Amino acid sequence: MCLLYFSYQTCPNSIRKKILQTDFAEIFLPSVPVLQWAKHYSEQEYERLSHYRGAHGWGTVSADVLNESLAILNTSANRLMFDNWEKRETKSQCIRCAVVGNAGILNGSKKGQEIDQNDYVFRTNGAVIKGFEQDVGSRTSFYTFSTNTFRNSLRSYARVGYKSAPQTAETRYIFLPDHDRDYILMRAASLHIPILKGKDRSSKPPSYFGSDVTVEKFKMYHPDFIRYIRNRFLHSRRLNGRLKYIYRPSTGAVMLLAALHTCDEVNAYGFMTPDFQKYSDHYYDKTPHRVRFFGNHDLRMELKLWQKLHKAELINLYLRT
Image (cartoon, rainbow, N blue to C red):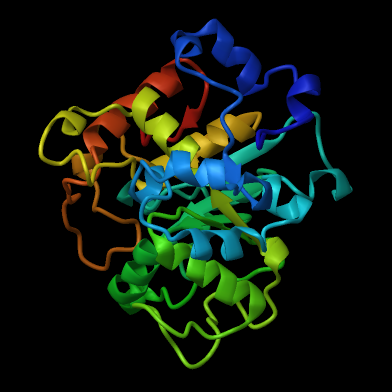
């Protein structure tokens, strides 16, 4: 089990205690693993999860690729979200997390210092920091991405300074795997070896995470967790139509809901709010443009979920006033 394993027992206001007193108690399953690691692979598990494709299972990954990749994730750092909590000199009873999306509402917010004062800071995809520290902070504890969304971010946001994943001593990298590319990249980056075949093949080892990155820096979301949050928290009508095979929660939604299941307190910044049309799509946009909607995510449903979680006092959602 990959949930926070000790803090909620001492934190008086832990989300896992509060949620049982809300309407979310009926859909909340604390036993679902948030992360996957070496122990999760077996022939029986491969057979079970091969029935689900994309981020929801292992149906798009060969048994060989999956086995040799997950086998690397065999340390406590890979299976525990907050693997360094007990080693911290200053820690409270409760683990406070800032979860930072990339929405335009953060531009001019001056929330950077507040964000950095949390115990951990989650970011995702095109998380541009340089030049925006006053609004979004400077720390990155966890960076959530898939190989596809990461490469898209490198292409799309290079003009505003996004040229690599955050690289700091505290940063951990959490893959949201939706095909074999994620497992292959994680293994190559961990072992510092080239990718010899496939769409991401290269003659040199991946350098996105720094030349001295170690396997302890990597984590991967479990497909059971992605399927669980899709079915119970974000069960969109798109699952009943032609988009059912490509629909999944957005990368930011996975990140926020993972924090909900592991942190004691969640402070969410840069997520969609009812007045989203007042702001540009991203806080780092050089010229304003509207939020774009795509068929593989249901952002309006996610917006409603954030409002419900905020009203239930399970997250503290930043609302511009």
